[in-house]
Length: 396
Image (cartoon, rainbow, N blue to C red; front, side, top):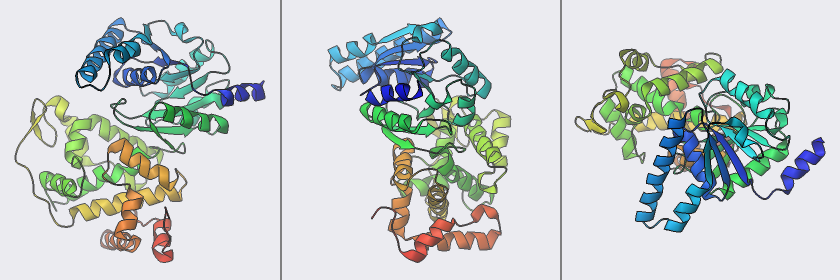
């Protein structure tokens, strides 16, 4: 049965019918992506209102795309017609793939997967859109853990190209290759990540926030000046603007989760300043105040000025983290750079950027920080030091 099941998967050109559980922003976005790729989609949510909101939102999106000439009226109608909305989980029976997009709680997701196993055939694939939980732990709750994997889309899913493909320890290797092929068929840029805390993006991106917070806490530069420094080197938003957009409750929770999962590694230590914002209810744009004040979505206040050394310090930490992800085999060099460009819109892949600057330059910066502070937070990746000494390239 095992061989026959995975022979069936290898013979499939594309997932034809897709179930998505959870009709929030992410679930609705994934439904749109799958439907536009030609799949028949069953979107499930326990609440009728959530399904209605999802339907209305998709209609508005399709209308805008038609107005801009990016879709024909026929294409828009076909996309909407491929999505069936229901409150009954049993309606996913017959789907080739089911992706969960429910609350970020291990028990809730595990319970859902157990319920789905009682509905789906053994050939169906179970995927989680988790951004922080262990895919291996979720698979463990299943009778057939070899058909479980992570498909982590980024918000807004229809616009962001990246999908992190995360196999559990138990995942059949054939399924990873199959998932990558299907994500490409859906028009996405897949990056395969080891099932480690934060996967690629939420691990490698931590210094963008944490080192900016550290610089601010030390009084070396203002919030506005740090943001201006990062925009000057090509980032679309500075770290404080982005944290305000994401929401400090969300950003602090992700940092805390990664820090705990790495057994308190000081590189991922959360910020007291951000914790205080959460305690005050100053969550960013959605509450009207974070590091900045807001009038609706408009930031109130004067713009900062780039400050010498700020961007170099944050970039050195980011590049070191990216190299370390390769060192620990979290992902290939190619997939790390794809993930950071396609998942969080970095102006360049961090590894290619480090090569361009010179690995020796990044090593020197890390050693300078380590010498000044004497903290493990600033330890240089062994692979970064090796690259600097050998003169080798990640990509040539």
